[in-house]
Image (cartoon, rainbow, N blue to C red; front, side, top):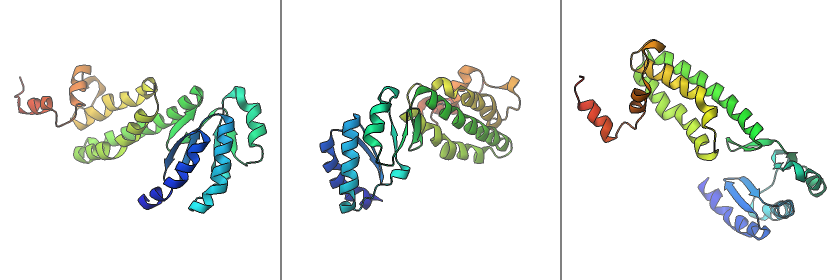
Length: 208
């Protein structure tokens, strides 16, 4: 994979002449710009790509266009076979497009993550270490990526946050019911990174 990425650098540099902003991940190429510049980028990628071992796949390519530019897009890209949408599409696990599409996409993800947390919470009652490892080294990376790539989504993650606070943390710490759950302050302390000085202090302080 690393050698493939290096081999695409000359092609990427050549495509910079189209005045688009590019993002590449292995063979997944993305470009942002005006419709005219994007058409020039696609034409150059299609014609020059094979010389660098890169072959475009229009059937898996999507153009996300603003609604006011849909007419121009149809004229410019009618012969390319590229899919077009003004709503949005998934991009490398994140979402690009309208706010409606973004919220719908994330809501589906949050439902799946919440279900996973509830299942791990059941395991935590008898296998706390295994549940902790699954949380830290497994599922936590899923939403970390979203937080790094999609802005202004904290309100959409609230059901998921509630599942962690009201189910997972009580289960992993031996508290069985919601009425016996942590206060917001206690929750804030528990979710601190485990190597922070404050947590070390808490570990070494006798219970009052």
